[in-house]
Length: 316
Image (cartoon, rainbow, N blue to C red):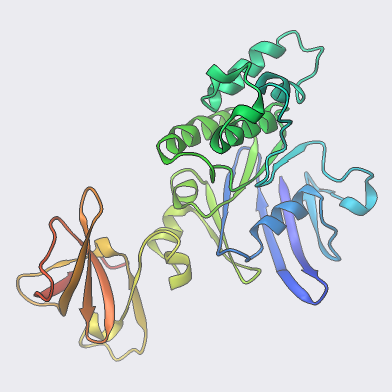
């Protein structure tokens, strides 16, 4: 088990992380989300042992990890870390790059390299020099290389950021299935909703260097505690409760995703259409509700300035 125990970190006077604590087990996939600059990448670097911390500690199976001040070469042997800049040698082949993380004494070395290239959908590039690959192809090779040693803990920083959208989902399914089969703990820092919602066992949300939420994707999506959390998963409407329930005297707001509102033929919130955005399977409609903007989904585009009534489909 990995235990991050009350760690804080800062550069000179700037505090980057504040009192971060969580645990994760072998085979888990943990997604870390938060706005740019909130400390996601720094947290991965601390766990791996690249940054020294004065407060708190990181443990693996109850053994305290000492950090960079105690090692000539920072980093833990049982972990692998893939930063946003790929650790690849450009003038040798894909096979040779991945092979550097597999023992030359392994009789199945070539077969293992081929299996890893299948995981990242790069089988046709075995003999290609890395300098001739695109950014997305290099990122896939880097992923194959980092999992070649079958670490107990894998830390990935925005691992799919350079990869074409039409390849991402296939790669995610293949990679995370492989990691589950190998019982590898994987922690991913990401901005991508799909990385978190569709594949993670748990999501950690960081804001201004603090861990503000840790739960399953289902719980965080269905019961977000703030607009900040909900906004990572979808567009979000923050509507005063008295607009939804006229009998309410509470001065609070309710968070609603666009799919939780629909047009009513009887009564509801009075709104005026601004514009319609085609989203493929539906339209995202932007409208004005009193003095604020509201978003909801509809099967067709709606005429600008049309007056409508909206009702809540679902209350959390």
